[in-house]
Image 1 (cartoon, helix red, strand yellow):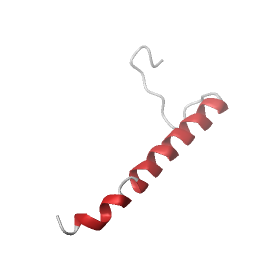
Image 2 (cartoon, helix red, strand yellow):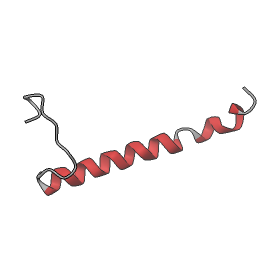
Image 3 (cartoon, one colour):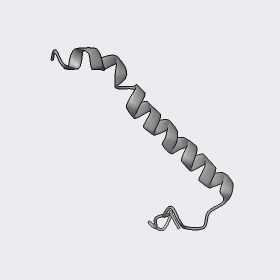
Length: 47
């Protein structure tokens, strides 16, 4: 499906292990977006 240019939607059937891996990767990405900004937070208001 993906090789043919298709997409997998959240409610599509997929192996449970694959779904868990995707959820873990999405959670890690979200965490990086939030935590990655914290060190710069102190000087942004002064920039």
